[in-house]
Image 1 (cartoon, rainbow, N blue to C red):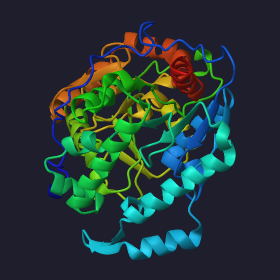
Image 2: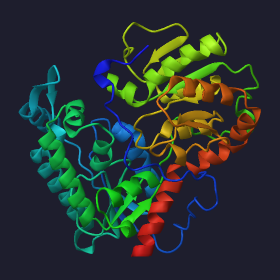
Image 3: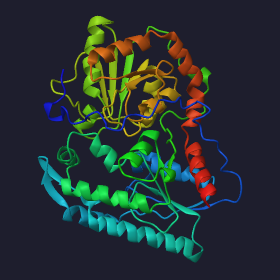
Image 4: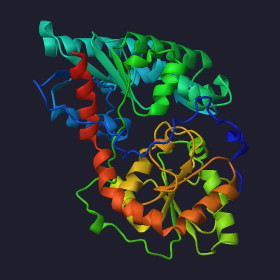
Length: 421
């Protein structure tokens, strides 16, 4: 089964290759938490909040703020648009693109101006003349009084370079190429003004330096944290997965059919056909993350399509599955891999983007190199039969959960800011 031809070739091999894979549990990679030393910092937290704040950036924005509050005197100076203002801005920027009405209000100059004024007003009202030790801003949404830091999982340069053309990428985002170019230039200007940049991955850090021209000295890597896999679980509470192992799982946040293609969903479905034909006819695949099945021809045999599920249900699937498979063609970070590993579930992904920074080939799963269902099927079959990988993942799960925690992320940030103060 092939993906819709409209997405074929959209995502290309990224010109910035993945950073050399380093096990996230290696002592040389783990940041040392010394944020508790010295006086508590005064931090301004600047975010563009969604109407339901806990859903902003898939919950990352909310959880990071709460973790920072435990380590510093953190004041939320973020902006949340009043309903009427949001409605007016949406109406002003609604156009017919890509076969349907869509709005680009989030990318408009009016919105930019509103956000910057609101953030600066919040900073002035909460900190006055005394100021703060630093502001931490989610994404690059404004230029703030220094010192300020940004935090995100990607950049416009990084995303554009992973597609076959600026025009096609703009069409996917349902905005004009000129708007994409303007957003890119604005973002780079904010990065150049910022005191520092917290990148979620070493891959993004390389892109910021090599593609956006940012001084590497101001780029700091602060991997993000998981939500769905968290808990006070010990290795004894994890499923043993002794076999037979036949249950594959694919989970992703997917709003559009192209997201399924971006995450390699079509490749997984094709590999499932190979696995059921050549390896084991009882192997199955559970798919989570879209409202409707995204490929033509309906849901195939062996696939259990669950639609969109809450995190508690996704966590149950991590525990009831035997292998997580998501060979993304473009993946800014990939927290679902960390979620799966925190439940002792091995992963098969692609040797690209930030995925090698989460999955250690031969230790916690496997990484494929080509867009080939036969290579993917062979990797899946190999991991399913590898008792040592399952033993490793079960033993490592509690430490993975500890490492991919918002407390560690916040500690990394506070440490950097403290040293710069």
